[in-house]
Image 1 (cartoon, rainbow, N blue to C red):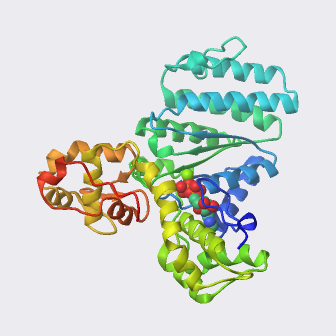
Image 2: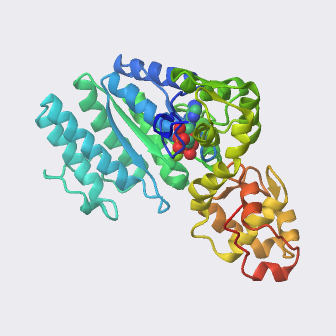
Image 3: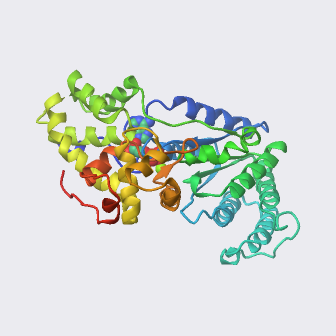
Length: 407
Ligand SMILES: Nc1ncnc2c1ncn2[C@@H]1O[C@H](COP(=O)(O)OP(=O)(O)O)[C@@H](O)[C@H]1O
Ligand SMILES: [Mg+2]
């Protein structure tokens, strides 16, 4: 059928044509935003889940919601360097300048910018942020990040409150930050909440983020809820496929829906990719059949391999790839580190550094002590497509993996 009118949207952060199954999260955020504007507490959200489940999409949704409620908003994305403080400082600067531009605040913003300047001067690369006011020392420049973030959030929160607005910060890929920095963020928000200031954060990260916050969780739970974002239930997954098609007068056969659900397990990214390819391949004019889904399978798989799976493996070493391949050999779900080591003919301890590096690269996480799992759903099947032969010997481990480019 006509690719131009294809409604489906595989892609990182791409808004789905039908956003299903997330009403509770959106409603909770809306309640928080409205409460904050009334000088009450509103809880922030820390979304965790594997790749491709729709976390970034939710952050974008929160942004739209916040703007409709008259909030100011900034989006931050943490990268592998884990630096949050500098990015936060830059975001706060943008928010203050935007508030000033829209509300003509003047002196109070100049002071807040001064506090921000003193805050940023304490950071390693802080002087990079250009702030054209005199630094105001005292509230946020002790050099202790938790204290200083508290001081900064109070400044920002007061300016927002005094001008009848609030601030939403969305922070993506939050699993890259260290415990220390995450604790500082929680402390800063906690301080703002104590003073009933209208600052709210929506964070998103891989499941390791939940473990990272685990130890400080009881404290963090005062300011954050921790929703887990996962695959869609069958009825929701069907809706995600049928609603956008129906808008165009296109009908999905029952068998076609069943097949897509079976192949994707209800994971949002996969749903969008399979639906897109089935649509393109269908003869139509207004129907997608089970056979269409079958025919589109190799194309959808190849698209996922290139656009979703392989991008994650770009910078892996041979040893890391074989480690990932061995996890895949253990089948779906978490693998025991000991079993992975056995498959590679090595001692667990010898594989420690490899395990740590695939975790640091966010390809894997440790759901429980002694276990390791992929952060990407269905990654085991991908690894098997990529490196079909896995011979159990230490010799295999040191040789170049066979890279199969076609399915
Ligand atoms: N609730 C949903 N219903 C249908 N599709 C969704 C939903 N949430 C996300 N998607 C789709 O899933 C894909 C991945 O979303 P994204 O937000 O990038 O995931 P994550 O940030 O968790 O890796 C996108 O193609 C998006 O259109
Ligand atoms: Mg994302």
